[in-house]
Length: 573
Image 1 (cartoon, rainbow, N blue to C red):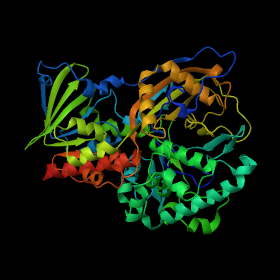
Image 2: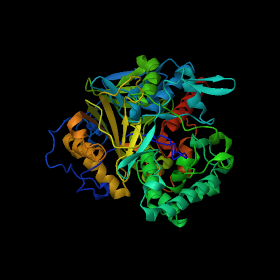
Image 3: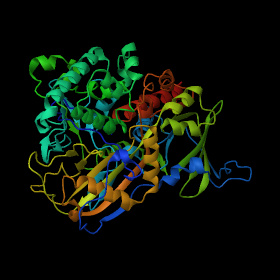
Image 4: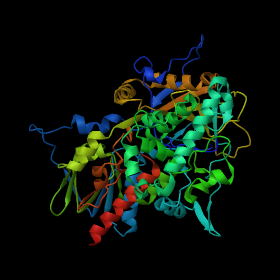
């Protein structure tokens, strides 16, 4: 999952939440082929990790049922004060908020065998690595819930009026590099001097044009994170009803290098390209954090073009070998006695005095019934719509227009440092220009070892594609094709910059997410129905990053905390 553009050529990292790719023949938009070496090395070991997707599909395929087709009668009955359904970042935040409000009698029900959602971690060859989101940008002043959490975890403190972060968690340099023109260059924005001569002048002009447009739109607190704290206006409505690609076309911003980079950013943060996401989402990626400054722009004049809230931050990010699992595990630890994993919630029914939650325990293979006066649904909105016995018109409206992008995360164990091309040195984030994948992250980048050695490369693929048809085909391929096919595809992509990878790779562990993150398509973020779902409810509260129309840690934490507070207030009243 990503966010945080870089204006300094840009030295900014992005969040990856989960990706995947499908067979090149079935999905030509991926532009991927198998390894072209005449004498390919012996295939590395490969396998899927994480819970089987079939567990989540129980909502669609059904369970052992009575002859009438009804759900099996519950064999276990539970009562408590509050139930949180879903153990991703939003669910963990909601449960944490309830517990901190003094609600001790609460239970968190999670489908998978571990909590964390898109921020889970993994261990490969004894090394920690991410299974999804792998970093958190240094928060802006509006992200109050993130700041509170970081201070509680000892990652941030204030000295002489300035925020100071734990150096061990701040991403070490070098942070980012781009493989272009046969070598590595610092940053991820394609350098003008690395492009064909015929593209250089127009690319430089279009870089400046885009930077100027973003600076104008970012004025007046129009963009903030979490996005609920933005100063929404009719101008943002107008941005939200068109695609980012159409908005760029309308301004003549067509330079191939700029369009590749902007499409890359959209895929990184939203799971789909600029032809699918709204212009609001495309601008939000930059304006909500560090803006976009064309190469060569600098000095006081350039800095003065940006609001003070963004101009004084340098694009720093917090990261760990296991990615955001470091945060998720610390959110989950105090809730260990109140968390039930392997629980497939099947139906939620709101009654006059309580909410009834029917579920299937995957371990005991028994139906269970949970009852509580307050419930937080920290599940994707399309899942919430299936769970609720009587979903609202607003929920049905949002679900009908909200697609979700599939992702694949591949962790590759390499037993020796990879050979490198000239240019920028090995970095935390490494991207191939023109590639359809999102590059790879070195999971051992934060290590203080004095020399390079075996490591894990975490490769990310966003599978939303350029339109709804490509998204659907990608999801089918992700779920149907075997781990060997995907591992070969991932290794072949990175081998474009590291031809020795096939010989040094020992194992590839793959994590697939069929519905990883909502895609902020035109008209979604400005929807009145979406805003209504984030309002306090009577007994069933919604808490998920879907409520912001896109998926990042800050939005999930915000909505989970908000919903937890609303439920706690209802219980106290």
